[in-house]
Image: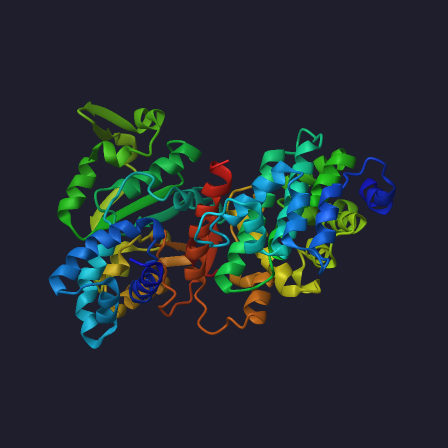
Length: 269
Length: 291
Protein backbone atom coordinates (compact mmCIF):
# COMPACT_ATOMS: atom_id res chain seq x y z
CA UNK A 1 0.00 0.00 0.00
CA UNK A 2 1.45 3.38 -0.84
CA UNK A 3 1.93 5.73 2.13
CA UNK A 4 -0.77 8.17 1.05
CA UNK A 5 -3.40 5.47 0.76
CA UNK A 6 -2.37 4.02 4.09
CA UNK A 7 -2.65 7.46 5.71
CA UNK A 8 -6.11 7.99 4.22
CA UNK A 9 -7.25 4.52 5.16
CA UNK A 10 -6.16 4.91 8.76
CA UNK A 11 -7.86 8.28 9.03
CA UNK A 12 -11.02 6.65 7.71
CA UNK A 13 -10.73 3.80 10.23
CA UNK A 14 -10.12 6.27 13.03
CA UNK A 15 -13.16 8.37 12.15
CA UNK A 16 -15.40 5.32 12.02
CA UNK A 17 -14.07 3.36 14.98
CA UNK A 18 -11.86 5.56 17.16
CA UNK A 19 -8.96 3.15 16.63
CA UNK A 20 -5.66 4.60 15.47
CA UNK A 21 -4.04 1.99 13.31
CA UNK A 22 -0.29 1.95 13.90
CA UNK A 23 2.15 2.03 10.99
CA UNK A 24 4.04 -0.82 12.54
CA UNK A 25 1.02 -3.05 11.91
CA UNK A 26 0.58 -2.04 8.30
CA UNK A 27 1.71 -5.43 7.01
CA UNK A 28 -1.04 -7.09 9.05
CA UNK A 29 -3.68 -4.82 7.60
CA UNK A 30 -2.38 -5.36 4.08
CA UNK A 31 -2.41 -9.13 4.49
CA UNK A 32 -5.86 -9.27 5.91
CA UNK A 33 -7.39 -6.86 3.44
CA UNK A 34 -5.84 -8.50 0.41
CA UNK A 35 -8.32 -11.32 0.87
CA UNK A 36 -11.20 -8.84 0.97
CA UNK A 37 -9.96 -7.16 -2.20
CA UNK A 38 -10.07 -10.49 -3.98
CA UNK A 39 -13.55 -11.27 -2.72
CA UNK A 40 -14.79 -7.87 -3.83
CA UNK A 41 -12.99 -8.11 -7.13
CA UNK A 42 -11.05 -4.91 -6.54
CA UNK A 43 -7.57 -4.46 -7.93
CA UNK A 44 -6.02 -1.93 -5.55
CA UNK A 45 -6.25 -0.46 -2.08
CA UNK A 46 -7.17 2.90 -3.63
CA UNK A 47 -10.22 1.26 -5.12
CA UNK A 48 -11.03 -0.36 -1.81
CA UNK A 49 -10.84 3.03 -0.11
CA UNK A 50 -13.17 4.54 -2.71
CA UNK A 51 -15.57 1.63 -2.15
CA UNK A 52 -15.50 2.22 1.62
CA UNK A 53 -16.29 5.89 1.16
CA UNK A 54 -19.12 5.21 -1.30
CA UNK A 55 -22.74 4.82 -0.11
CA UNK A 56 -22.40 1.04 -0.36
CA UNK A 57 -19.33 1.20 1.84
CA UNK A 58 -21.22 1.00 5.14
CA UNK A 59 -21.69 -2.74 4.68
CA UNK A 60 -17.95 -3.10 4.35
CA UNK A 61 -17.29 -1.68 7.84
CA UNK A 62 -17.88 -5.06 9.49
CA UNK A 63 -15.24 -6.94 7.47
CA UNK A 64 -12.87 -3.97 7.77
CA UNK A 65 -13.13 -3.89 11.57
CA UNK A 66 -12.62 -7.65 11.68
CA UNK A 67 -9.40 -7.09 9.74
CA UNK A 68 -8.09 -4.42 12.10
CA UNK A 69 -8.94 -6.02 15.41
CA UNK A 70 -6.17 -8.15 16.63
CA UNK A 71 -7.65 -10.04 19.46
CA UNK A 72 -4.48 -10.87 21.26
CA UNK A 73 -4.42 -10.74 24.99
CA UNK A 74 -1.54 -11.36 27.33
CA UNK A 75 -0.38 -10.32 30.78
CA UNK A 76 0.87 -6.72 31.01
CA UNK A 77 -0.23 -5.88 27.48
CA UNK A 78 0.41 -2.18 26.86
CA UNK A 79 2.56 -1.78 29.90
CA UNK A 80 2.45 2.05 29.74
CA UNK A 81 -1.25 2.00 30.55
CA UNK A 82 -0.71 -0.42 33.42
CA UNK A 83 2.08 1.82 34.75
CA UNK A 84 -0.13 4.91 34.53
CA UNK A 85 -2.79 2.99 36.45
CA UNK A 86 -0.40 1.74 39.14
CA UNK A 87 1.81 4.80 39.53
CA UNK A 88 -0.52 7.74 38.95
CA UNK A 89 -4.23 6.92 38.96
CA UNK A 90 -4.32 4.58 41.94
CA UNK A 91 -2.14 6.71 44.28
CA UNK A 92 -4.17 9.78 43.31
CA UNK A 93 -7.50 8.06 44.01
CA UNK A 94 -6.20 6.62 47.28
CA UNK A 95 -5.65 10.14 48.61
CA UNK A 96 -9.40 10.37 49.08
CA UNK A 97 -10.36 6.86 50.14
CA UNK A 98 -8.78 3.74 51.54
CA UNK A 99 -9.82 1.36 48.82
CA UNK A 100 -10.95 1.73 45.23
CA UNK A 101 -13.16 -0.19 42.82
CA UNK A 102 -11.74 -1.25 39.49
CA UNK A 103 -13.67 -2.81 36.62
CA UNK A 104 -12.25 -4.79 33.75
CA UNK A 105 -15.24 -4.44 31.44
CA UNK A 106 -14.33 -7.00 28.79
CA UNK A 107 -11.98 -9.28 30.62
CA UNK A 108 -11.97 -12.16 28.12
CA UNK A 109 -9.88 -15.01 29.54
CA UNK A 110 -8.74 -12.99 32.56
CA UNK A 111 -5.29 -11.68 31.62
CA UNK A 112 -6.32 -8.06 32.15
CA UNK A 113 -7.92 -8.26 35.63
CA UNK A 114 -5.15 -10.55 36.90
CA UNK A 115 -2.57 -8.14 35.47
CA UNK A 116 -4.16 -5.33 37.47
CA UNK A 117 -4.01 -7.42 40.65
CA UNK A 118 -0.38 -8.37 40.07
CA UNK A 119 0.61 -4.77 39.28
CA UNK A 120 -0.96 -3.59 42.53
CA UNK A 121 0.56 -6.44 44.54
CA UNK A 122 4.01 -5.47 43.29
CA UNK A 123 3.41 -2.05 44.81
CA UNK A 124 1.18 -2.63 47.83
CA UNK A 125 1.80 -6.25 48.77
CA UNK A 126 -0.82 -8.97 48.84
CA UNK A 127 -3.34 -6.83 50.65
CA UNK A 128 -4.13 -4.55 47.73
CA UNK A 129 -6.26 -1.44 48.33
CA UNK A 130 -8.64 -2.31 45.48
CA UNK A 131 -11.54 -4.54 44.61
CA UNK A 132 -11.51 -5.85 41.06
CA UNK A 133 -14.63 -6.69 39.10
CA UNK A 134 -14.10 -8.49 35.82
CA UNK A 135 -16.85 -9.09 33.32
CA UNK A 136 -17.46 -10.41 29.87
CA UNK A 137 -20.43 -11.29 27.73
CA UNK A 138 -19.24 -14.84 27.05
CA UNK A 139 -19.60 -17.56 29.68
CA UNK A 140 -17.05 -19.64 27.87
CA UNK A 141 -14.23 -17.12 28.35
CA UNK A 142 -15.35 -16.41 31.90
CA UNK A 143 -14.96 -20.11 32.75
CA UNK A 144 -11.46 -20.02 31.33
CA UNK A 145 -10.69 -16.88 33.31
CA UNK A 146 -11.84 -18.51 36.53
CA UNK A 147 -9.79 -21.59 35.76
CA UNK A 148 -6.77 -19.33 35.26
CA UNK A 149 -4.54 -21.60 33.18
CA UNK A 150 -2.35 -19.90 30.58
CA UNK A 151 0.11 -20.81 27.86
CA UNK A 152 3.58 -19.38 27.16
CA UNK A 153 2.21 -16.64 24.93
CA UNK A 154 0.07 -15.13 27.70
CA UNK A 155 2.97 -14.85 30.13
CA UNK A 156 5.64 -13.79 27.61
CA UNK A 157 6.08 -10.34 29.14
CA UNK A 158 6.63 -11.66 32.66
CA UNK A 159 10.07 -12.23 34.16
CA UNK A 160 10.86 -15.72 35.51
CA UNK A 161 10.64 -14.17 38.96
CA UNK A 162 7.14 -12.84 38.39
CA UNK A 163 6.04 -16.17 36.93
CA UNK A 164 7.26 -18.01 40.02
CA UNK A 165 5.64 -15.50 42.33
CA UNK A 166 2.18 -15.47 40.81
CA UNK A 167 1.82 -18.77 38.93
CA UNK A 168 2.18 -22.48 39.54
CA UNK A 169 3.98 -24.12 36.68
CA UNK A 170 2.03 -27.10 35.44
CA UNK A 171 4.67 -28.28 32.97
CA UNK A 172 4.32 -28.37 29.18
CA UNK A 173 4.37 -24.58 29.07
CA UNK A 174 1.21 -24.20 31.14
CA UNK A 175 0.89 -21.78 34.03
CA UNK A 176 -1.86 -21.60 36.62
CA UNK A 177 -2.56 -18.33 38.38
CA UNK A 178 -2.14 -18.67 42.15
CA UNK A 179 -5.17 -18.57 44.43
CA UNK A 180 -4.13 -15.46 46.32
CA UNK A 181 -4.31 -13.54 43.02
CA UNK A 182 -7.50 -15.21 41.84
CA UNK A 183 -9.31 -14.45 45.09
CA UNK A 184 -8.95 -10.71 44.43
CA UNK A 185 -11.11 -10.81 41.30
CA UNK A 186 -14.87 -11.22 41.10
CA UNK A 187 -16.05 -12.52 37.71
CA UNK A 188 -19.52 -11.77 36.36
CA UNK A 189 -21.34 -12.15 33.07
CA UNK A 190 -22.29 -8.63 32.03
CA UNK A 191 -23.48 -7.28 28.70
CA UNK A 192 -22.36 -3.67 28.23
CA UNK A 193 -25.61 -2.94 26.37
CA UNK A 194 -27.79 -4.24 29.21
CA UNK A 195 -30.21 -1.45 30.25
CA UNK A 196 -29.54 -2.43 33.87
CA UNK A 197 -25.76 -2.10 33.38
CA UNK A 198 -25.18 0.51 36.08
CA UNK A 199 -27.10 -1.48 38.70
CA UNK A 200 -25.17 -4.65 37.93
CA UNK A 201 -21.80 -2.97 38.07
CA UNK A 202 -22.17 -0.44 40.86
CA UNK A 203 -19.85 2.53 41.39
CA UNK A 204 -16.33 2.37 40.02
CA UNK A 205 -13.13 4.42 40.24
CA UNK A 206 -11.33 2.98 37.23
CA UNK A 207 -12.81 1.27 34.18
CA UNK A 208 -10.67 -0.69 31.74
CA UNK A 209 -12.59 -1.00 28.48
CA UNK A 210 -9.92 -1.70 25.91
CA UNK A 211 -10.77 -2.26 22.26
CA UNK A 212 -14.38 -3.17 22.90
CA UNK A 213 -16.32 -0.18 21.64
CA UNK A 214 -15.27 -0.98 18.09
CA UNK A 215 -17.83 -3.78 18.06
CA UNK A 216 -20.72 -1.39 18.71
CA UNK A 217 -22.43 1.04 16.38
CA UNK A 218 -22.26 4.76 17.11
CA UNK A 219 -25.48 4.91 19.11
CA UNK A 220 -24.53 1.99 21.28
CA UNK A 221 -21.05 3.47 21.88
CA UNK A 222 -22.52 6.78 22.88
CA UNK A 223 -24.93 5.05 25.26
CA UNK A 224 -22.25 2.93 26.93
CA UNK A 225 -19.97 5.93 27.40
CA UNK A 226 -22.82 7.97 28.89
CA UNK A 227 -23.65 5.20 31.35
CA UNK A 228 -19.98 4.98 32.34
CA UNK A 229 -19.87 8.72 32.89
CA UNK A 230 -23.24 9.39 34.49
CA UNK A 231 -23.98 6.28 36.48
CA UNK A 232 -20.86 4.23 37.10
CA UNK A 233 -17.73 6.35 37.47
CA UNK A 234 -17.16 8.28 40.66
CA UNK A 235 -16.00 11.89 40.22
CA UNK A 236 -12.25 11.88 39.54
CA UNK A 237 -12.51 8.34 38.19
CA UNK A 238 -10.76 7.12 35.03
CA UNK A 239 -11.74 5.37 31.85
CA UNK A 240 -8.91 3.48 30.13
CA UNK A 241 -9.52 2.58 26.49
CA UNK A 242 -7.26 0.63 24.13
CA UNK A 243 -3.77 2.05 23.77
CA UNK A 244 -4.60 3.67 20.44
CA UNK A 245 -8.33 4.09 20.90
CA UNK A 246 -10.22 7.33 21.50
CA UNK A 247 -13.73 8.60 22.10
CA UNK A 248 -13.01 12.00 20.54
CA UNK A 249 -15.78 11.57 18.00
CA UNK A 250 -18.36 10.96 20.72
CA UNK A 251 -19.99 13.68 22.68
CA UNK A 252 -18.65 13.43 26.22
CA UNK A 253 -17.61 15.49 29.19
CA UNK A 254 -14.58 13.28 29.81
CA UNK A 255 -11.25 15.06 30.09
CA UNK A 256 -8.29 13.66 28.16
CA UNK A 257 -5.23 13.16 30.42
CA UNK A 258 -1.67 12.41 29.35
CA UNK A 259 0.62 10.05 31.23
CA UNK A 260 3.95 8.51 30.28
CA UNK A 261 3.23 7.53 26.67
CA UNK A 262 -0.37 6.73 27.49
CA UNK A 263 -3.67 8.56 27.66
CA UNK A 264 -6.85 8.03 29.68
CA UNK A 265 -10.15 9.82 30.15
CA UNK A 266 -11.08 11.30 33.49
CA UNK A 267 -14.45 12.32 34.88
CA UNK A 268 -13.80 15.75 36.43
CA UNK A 269 -14.13 16.08 40.21
CA UNK B 1 22.86 37.62 48.22
CA UNK B 2 22.24 33.96 47.51
CA UNK B 3 24.58 31.79 45.54
CA UNK B 4 22.41 31.33 42.49
CA UNK B 5 21.76 35.06 42.19
CA UNK B 6 25.49 35.63 42.53
CA UNK B 7 26.17 33.10 39.80
CA UNK B 8 23.66 34.81 37.54
CA UNK B 9 25.09 38.28 38.11
CA UNK B 10 28.70 37.22 37.61
CA UNK B 11 28.25 34.71 34.84
CA UNK B 12 30.20 36.75 32.29
CA UNK B 13 33.22 36.95 34.61
CA UNK B 14 33.66 33.27 35.26
CA UNK B 15 37.02 32.16 33.90
CA UNK B 16 36.29 28.56 33.13
CA UNK B 17 32.82 29.07 31.68
CA UNK B 18 32.07 26.36 29.09
CA UNK B 19 33.18 27.78 25.77
CA UNK B 20 31.34 27.70 22.52
CA UNK B 21 33.65 25.90 20.08
CA UNK B 22 35.35 28.08 17.47
CA UNK B 23 34.35 25.81 14.60
CA UNK B 24 30.68 26.34 15.44
CA UNK B 25 31.13 30.10 15.32
CA UNK B 26 32.78 29.81 11.98
CA UNK B 27 29.94 27.69 10.65
CA UNK B 28 27.28 30.07 11.97
CA UNK B 29 29.14 32.99 10.39
CA UNK B 30 29.29 31.14 7.06
CA UNK B 31 25.65 30.01 7.04
CA UNK B 32 24.59 33.61 7.53
CA UNK B 33 26.85 35.02 4.83
CA UNK B 34 24.96 35.25 1.49
CA UNK B 35 28.19 34.63 -0.43
CA UNK B 36 28.84 31.24 1.12
CA UNK B 37 28.55 28.20 -1.11
CA UNK B 38 27.87 24.68 0.06
CA UNK B 39 31.49 23.86 -0.87
CA UNK B 40 32.77 26.55 1.53
CA UNK B 41 30.64 25.14 4.29
CA UNK B 42 31.69 21.61 3.50
CA UNK B 43 35.39 22.56 3.80
CA UNK B 44 34.90 23.81 7.36
CA UNK B 45 32.59 21.05 8.54
CA UNK B 46 34.94 18.37 7.19
CA UNK B 47 37.51 19.34 9.82
CA UNK B 48 35.30 17.75 12.46
CA UNK B 49 34.45 14.12 11.61
CA UNK B 50 31.90 14.07 14.42
CA UNK B 51 29.93 16.84 12.78
CA UNK B 52 30.04 15.08 9.46
CA UNK B 53 28.54 11.98 11.01
CA UNK B 54 25.84 13.97 12.77
CA UNK B 55 24.80 15.84 9.66
CA UNK B 56 24.58 12.65 7.62
CA UNK B 57 22.62 10.99 10.39
CA UNK B 58 20.09 13.81 10.34
CA UNK B 59 19.88 13.95 6.57
CA UNK B 60 19.01 10.26 6.60
CA UNK B 61 16.58 10.38 9.50
CA UNK B 62 12.84 10.13 9.09
CA UNK B 63 12.50 13.60 10.62
CA UNK B 64 13.48 15.10 7.31
CA UNK B 65 11.69 12.53 5.25
CA UNK B 66 14.21 12.34 2.41
CA UNK B 67 13.62 9.25 0.38
CA UNK B 68 17.07 8.40 -0.92
CA UNK B 69 20.06 7.55 1.21
CA UNK B 70 22.39 10.51 1.54
CA UNK B 71 26.06 9.61 1.69
CA UNK B 72 27.93 12.73 0.68
CA UNK B 73 28.31 15.69 2.99
CA UNK B 74 27.81 18.16 0.17
CA UNK B 75 24.61 16.47 -0.87
CA UNK B 76 23.38 16.52 2.75
CA UNK B 77 24.14 20.24 3.08
CA UNK B 78 22.20 21.00 -0.08
CA UNK B 79 19.24 18.88 0.91
CA UNK B 80 19.00 20.15 4.47
CA UNK B 81 19.71 23.77 3.70
CA UNK B 82 22.05 26.13 5.52
CA UNK B 83 19.68 26.94 8.35
CA UNK B 84 19.20 23.33 9.31
CA UNK B 85 22.89 22.64 9.03
CA UNK B 86 23.51 25.53 11.40
CA UNK B 87 21.04 24.08 13.88
CA UNK B 88 22.49 20.61 13.71
CA UNK B 89 25.98 21.99 14.24
CA UNK B 90 24.82 24.02 17.18
CA UNK B 91 23.20 21.15 19.01
CA UNK B 92 26.04 18.77 18.23
CA UNK B 93 28.64 21.04 19.76
CA UNK B 94 26.48 21.72 22.78
CA UNK B 95 25.84 18.04 23.33
CA UNK B 96 29.48 17.21 22.99
CA UNK B 97 30.57 20.02 25.30
CA UNK B 98 28.13 18.81 27.96
CA UNK B 99 29.60 15.36 27.51
CA UNK B 100 33.04 16.70 28.39
CA UNK B 101 31.97 18.52 31.55
CA UNK B 102 32.87 17.14 34.96
CA UNK B 103 29.41 16.67 36.39
CA UNK B 104 28.26 16.37 39.94
CA UNK B 105 27.08 13.06 41.39
CA UNK B 106 23.41 13.99 41.49
CA UNK B 107 23.39 14.99 37.89
CA UNK B 108 22.70 12.13 35.59
CA UNK B 109 24.44 13.20 32.41
CA UNK B 110 22.99 10.49 30.20
CA UNK B 111 19.46 11.17 31.32
CA UNK B 112 20.01 14.88 30.95
CA UNK B 113 21.25 14.45 27.40
CA UNK B 114 18.43 12.08 26.63
CA UNK B 115 15.85 14.51 27.89
CA UNK B 116 17.47 17.42 26.05
CA UNK B 117 17.72 15.55 22.83
CA UNK B 118 14.28 14.00 23.27
CA UNK B 119 12.79 17.45 23.74
CA UNK B 120 14.39 18.71 20.52
CA UNK B 121 13.19 15.70 18.56
CA UNK B 122 9.71 15.93 20.03
CA UNK B 123 9.50 19.65 19.22
CA UNK B 124 10.46 18.85 15.64
CA UNK B 125 7.86 16.07 15.46
CA UNK B 126 5.15 18.39 16.79
CA UNK B 127 5.85 20.98 14.14
CA UNK B 128 6.03 18.29 11.46
CA UNK B 129 2.58 17.01 12.41
CA UNK B 130 1.10 20.48 12.68
CA UNK B 131 2.88 21.79 9.58
CA UNK B 132 4.78 24.58 11.31
CA UNK B 133 7.94 25.84 9.72
CA UNK B 134 10.58 27.04 12.16
CA UNK B 135 13.54 25.95 10.01
CA UNK B 136 14.57 23.63 12.82
CA UNK B 137 14.89 26.39 15.43
CA UNK B 138 12.48 24.33 17.55
CA UNK B 139 14.96 21.52 17.36
CA UNK B 140 18.03 23.41 18.54
CA UNK B 141 16.18 25.38 21.19
CA UNK B 142 14.58 22.16 22.36
CA UNK B 143 17.96 20.55 22.76
CA UNK B 144 19.52 23.39 24.75
CA UNK B 145 16.44 24.51 26.71
CA UNK B 146 17.80 23.22 30.03
CA UNK B 147 21.41 24.34 29.63
CA UNK B 148 20.91 26.50 32.74
CA UNK B 149 20.73 23.34 34.82
CA UNK B 150 24.25 22.48 33.69
CA UNK B 151 25.43 25.84 35.05
CA UNK B 152 23.80 25.11 38.40
CA UNK B 153 25.52 21.79 38.49
CA UNK B 154 28.91 23.25 37.58
CA UNK B 155 28.96 26.33 39.80
CA UNK B 156 26.36 25.79 42.51
CA UNK B 157 26.04 22.04 43.04
CA UNK B 158 24.89 22.38 46.63
CA UNK B 159 22.08 24.66 45.45
CA UNK B 160 21.11 22.09 42.85
CA UNK B 161 20.84 19.52 45.64
CA UNK B 162 18.64 21.82 47.66
CA UNK B 163 16.40 22.55 44.70
CA UNK B 164 15.93 18.84 44.03
CA UNK B 165 15.39 18.04 47.74
CA UNK B 166 12.89 20.83 48.15
CA UNK B 167 11.04 19.81 45.00
CA UNK B 168 10.88 16.22 46.14
CA UNK B 169 9.75 17.02 49.70
CA UNK B 170 7.05 19.47 48.72
CA UNK B 171 6.01 17.86 45.46
CA UNK B 172 7.05 20.95 43.50
CA UNK B 173 8.30 21.21 39.96
CA UNK B 174 11.99 22.01 39.51
CA UNK B 175 11.29 25.60 38.51
CA UNK B 176 8.89 26.32 41.37
CA UNK B 177 11.45 24.92 43.76
CA UNK B 178 14.31 27.09 42.45
CA UNK B 179 12.14 30.20 42.43
CA UNK B 180 11.04 29.55 46.00
CA UNK B 181 14.60 29.06 47.22
CA UNK B 182 16.64 31.47 45.11
CA UNK B 183 14.38 33.66 43.01
CA UNK B 184 16.43 32.89 39.88
CA UNK B 185 15.73 29.96 37.63
CA UNK B 186 17.53 27.79 35.10
CA UNK B 187 15.73 29.53 32.21
CA UNK B 188 17.29 32.88 33.13
CA UNK B 189 20.68 31.31 33.73
CA UNK B 190 20.59 29.47 30.41
CA UNK B 191 19.47 32.53 28.47
CA UNK B 192 22.28 34.58 29.95
CA UNK B 193 24.88 31.98 29.00
CA UNK B 194 23.57 31.84 25.45
CA UNK B 195 23.72 35.59 25.11
CA UNK B 196 27.29 35.57 26.38
CA UNK B 197 27.96 32.99 23.69
CA UNK B 198 26.31 35.31 21.18
CA UNK B 199 23.73 32.81 19.94
CA UNK B 200 20.73 34.02 17.89
CA UNK B 201 18.03 35.98 19.75
CA UNK B 202 15.37 33.54 18.62
CA UNK B 203 16.97 30.68 20.53
CA UNK B 204 17.66 32.77 23.63
CA UNK B 205 14.02 33.84 23.67
CA UNK B 206 12.82 30.23 23.72
CA UNK B 207 15.30 29.11 26.38
CA UNK B 208 14.36 32.04 28.59
CA UNK B 209 10.63 31.40 28.23
CA UNK B 210 10.26 27.66 27.90
CA UNK B 211 8.31 27.60 31.16
CA UNK B 212 6.39 30.78 30.34
CA UNK B 213 5.73 30.68 26.60
CA UNK B 214 3.15 33.45 26.90
CA UNK B 215 5.98 35.88 27.64
CA UNK B 216 8.14 34.95 24.66
CA UNK B 217 8.57 37.11 21.57
CA UNK B 218 7.93 34.08 19.40
CA UNK B 219 5.08 32.58 21.41
CA UNK B 220 4.36 29.76 19.00
CA UNK B 221 7.96 28.57 18.89
CA UNK B 222 8.34 28.80 22.68
CA UNK B 223 5.05 26.94 23.11
CA UNK B 224 6.13 24.09 20.87
CA UNK B 225 9.30 23.65 22.92
CA UNK B 226 7.31 24.00 26.15
CA UNK B 227 4.88 21.25 25.12
CA UNK B 228 7.73 19.08 23.87
CA UNK B 229 9.35 19.51 27.28
CA UNK B 230 6.15 18.37 28.99
CA UNK B 231 5.78 15.40 26.70
CA UNK B 232 9.41 14.43 27.06
CA UNK B 233 9.08 14.23 30.80
CA UNK B 234 5.92 12.25 30.44
CA UNK B 235 7.69 10.08 27.95
CA UNK B 236 10.08 9.11 30.67
CA UNK B 237 13.26 10.34 29.07
CA UNK B 238 15.28 12.46 31.40
CA UNK B 239 15.19 13.14 35.11
CA UNK B 240 12.29 14.93 36.64
CA UNK B 241 9.07 13.05 36.61
CA UNK B 242 7.36 16.32 37.46
CA UNK B 243 4.68 15.66 34.96
CA UNK B 244 3.60 12.11 35.53
CA UNK B 245 0.15 13.32 34.55
CA UNK B 246 -1.06 16.46 32.85
CA UNK B 247 -3.99 17.75 30.88
CA UNK B 248 -2.63 19.15 27.66
CA UNK B 249 -5.80 21.10 26.93
CA UNK B 250 -5.31 23.11 30.10
CA UNK B 251 -1.67 23.90 29.43
CA UNK B 252 -0.90 27.49 28.46
CA UNK B 253 1.58 26.47 25.77
CA UNK B 254 -0.90 24.11 24.18
CA UNK B 255 -3.56 26.80 24.22
CA UNK B 256 -1.19 29.17 22.44
CA UNK B 257 -0.49 26.53 19.79
CA UNK B 258 -4.20 25.93 19.24
CA UNK B 259 -4.86 29.67 19.12
CA UNK B 260 -1.94 30.79 16.94
CA UNK B 261 -2.18 27.95 14.50
CA UNK B 262 -5.96 28.31 14.31
CA UNK B 263 -6.45 24.65 15.10
CA UNK B 264 -9.55 25.14 17.17
CA UNK B 265 -12.02 23.73 14.69
CA UNK B 266 -12.37 19.99 15.16
CA UNK B 267 -8.81 19.40 16.28
CA UNK B 268 -8.56 15.83 17.54
CA UNK B 269 -6.13 15.78 20.43
CA UNK B 270 -6.20 12.01 20.78
CA UNK B 271 -5.36 11.49 17.12
CA UNK B 272 -2.52 14.00 17.39
CA UNK B 273 -1.24 12.20 20.47
CA UNK B 274 -1.28 8.79 18.81
CA UNK B 275 0.67 10.16 15.85
CA UNK B 276 3.11 11.84 18.18
CA UNK B 277 3.68 8.68 20.23
CA UNK B 278 4.22 6.68 17.07
CA UNK B 279 6.83 9.14 15.81
CA UNK B 280 8.52 9.40 19.21
CA UNK B 281 8.83 5.60 19.30
CA UNK B 282 10.43 5.64 15.87
CA UNK B 283 12.78 8.48 16.77
CA UNK B 284 13.78 6.70 19.97
CA UNK B 285 14.77 3.64 18.04
CA UNK B 286 16.66 5.76 15.60
CA UNK B 287 18.57 7.90 18.08
CA UNK B 288 18.71 6.16 21.42
CA UNK B 289 18.58 2.45 20.90
CA UNK B 290 20.46 2.60 17.64
CA UNK B 291 23.45 4.48 18.99
